[in-house]
Image (cartoon, rainbow, N blue to C red):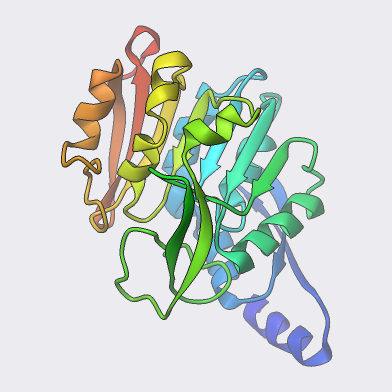
Length: 256
């Protein structure tokens, strides 16, 4: 039904929006491609991660959604019940996804909470090749692997350390889903880990690209452990794994 409406509106030159309830939260999305419909209704695949995040969020939190796509998790984070966070910074380097991210933030009246950045976060500053797969809403674009890519574009790249040094608030909670470049993102925040480490780090570790490794060849787990984090939750998802790392002096759950 939603796909048919999208195709009809395309023929008539009309915009398409989709309003639904995700994990108990009413949300509206701008739709340009079938993949976006799949992204919205596929949030069940991320439900365990989102539900793991929600109890960790407080009014004082600054959340970085790194690999935000069209903003589903950013919106679910910003609009969750009475625990509205102070700010969400959403990072999405792919131009079409970023444009839809901006539209979705506006459609849900969350511009006062969510700021979108057309930027990749990684281990260096400058520009980087983003390997693009699929259409708008596709979440498989990567700076770490070319597998399945139909195009490559240059996008802006910064370390999280650099981003924070420019005056942006440091994150208290991170969500990282960057298709195999997780280690690169972490490597770019080594200074922040010493001066103002995030309280919680949620990530999807992919079995591609960096393959659970830091750029120096060590494991992500060992790197985070060295900075005082413990793995408090994990769940297999496809060929990858969802994880929650938390500062040891604040942990309250057990990995399983």
